[in-house]
Each structure stands twice: as C-alpha cells, then as structure tokens.
Amino acid sequence: MLVHIVYAHPSGDSFTHSLLEAFVAGLDEAGHPHTVSDLYAMDFNPVLSSDEYARESSYAADRPIPQEVAAEQAKLDAADGWAFVYPVWWSDVPAILKGWFDRVWTVGWAYHPSNLSRARKALALCAAGHTVEQLRETGLYQSMRAVMLADRVFDRADAKQFHLFDGSEAMTGDEWQRARQRHLQQAHKLGREIGA
Ligand SMILES: Cc1cc2nc3c(=O)[nH]c(=O)nc-3n(C[C@H](O)[C@H](O)[C@H](O)COP(=O)(O)O)c2cc1C
Image (cartoon, rainbow, N blue to C red; front, top):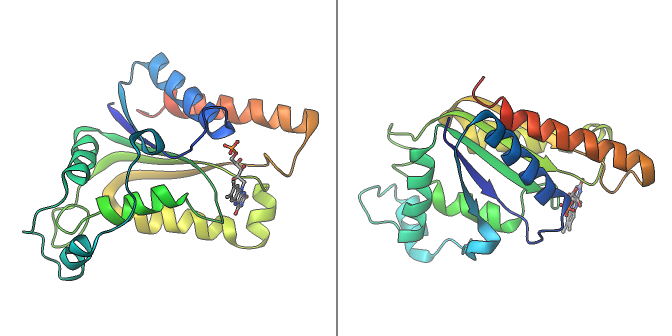
C-alpha cells in the first residue's frame, strides 16, 4: 500500500519525530512505499488567503486552487493510505497542520458536491504530554479523536484510526522510558500492518 504521511513537528530531536521514524521503519519492513509532506521542512504556508476563502465559502469548485495546495492533493490522491503524525498542542493539531487542512481540504476535492477524495485507510498518530486517562477525564481525548476522525477524515477513508502516544510530560524517568519504548513499538507495528 502506498502511504502518504503528513508530518508536523519543528524538531528532529522530538518524541514525535521518533514516532515518525518508527512508523516509517514498519512501513519499510512490510514493503509499503511512502511519501512525506514534512510541513515545517516545506515551510508550508498554513494561512487561508482571501481568494481561497472566497472560493470555499461560495462553493466555487471551478475556480483555480494554489499550486502548493494542488501538489498536496496529488500526493494524497496517489496514495491508498494516509497517516497524520503530530503532537497535541493546546488540545489540537499544531497550527501548521490545522492550516494545511483549512487549505488542502478544498471544495470539489474534499467535499461538495460528491467527488470526495478517498483513501483505503487513514491513521492519526498523535503524541501527547498528558496521559490518556487525564485526557479522557476532561473529555479532551474524545474531542481530539472526534475532530480528527469524524470531521477531518470523515468518510474520506474506508477505515480510520486515532492512536494517542501519551504521557511524555506526565511521566518521568524509567516509567517514561518504558512507555516511550512501548509507543515506538506500537508505531512500528502500525506501519508494518497498515495493509491488513
Ligand atoms: C505548544 C505546546 C502545547 C501543548 N499542548 C498540549 C496539550 O494540550 N495536551 C497535551 O497532552 N500535551 C500538550 N503538549 C505536550 C506535547 O503534546 C508533548 O510534548 C508531546 O508528547 C510531543 O513531544 P515532542 O515535542 O517531544 O514530540 C504541548 C506542547 C507544546 C510545545
């Protein structure tokens, strides 16, 4: 399965980057080719312009879209699987990825009238400082999952999954090292088994 990864983190030393590496190693091990949009490395502009706003808000699917937006859509169209790899920042995706959705999910491609772009599988791999228990207690886990799967992916994929790699700030020392190792093994497995 050809997988397109949308990756949003500014640092190569981050836990999120380790998740990306583990996921890609799993894809490689199973022979799944992949492409990557590394949004910070690309210096992707996340700000919807007034022209883009006018096109979206009037459902004018016949109007042109910016070249960098078309390039993102072409990478997604070419792939059977999509993976979003990012940290939780203020209970949502980083701004650069939020703006990527604002711009790339265009009318006529992502929604309305009916020619929705589709993947066989879409995965969200999301690193969080809090534990999943803490995030469930406040309802934030449920809201982050719902926004990613019920809104952003919606029916644009046949199968969709949200995976939270939690605890990087809530845990310390050996506890975190063990959790980190477990998380990296899970990310590797998700890559290896994405075609299943
Ligand atoms: C600006 C910013 C906002 C954050 N907001 C949250 C948050 O709302 N909830 C949470 O669980 N963790 C939050 N975190 C923690 C990150 O999700 C956590 O560091 C994550 O595991 C990514 O680690 P990494 O930066 O080493 O990849 C935030 C971190 C930053 C830098």
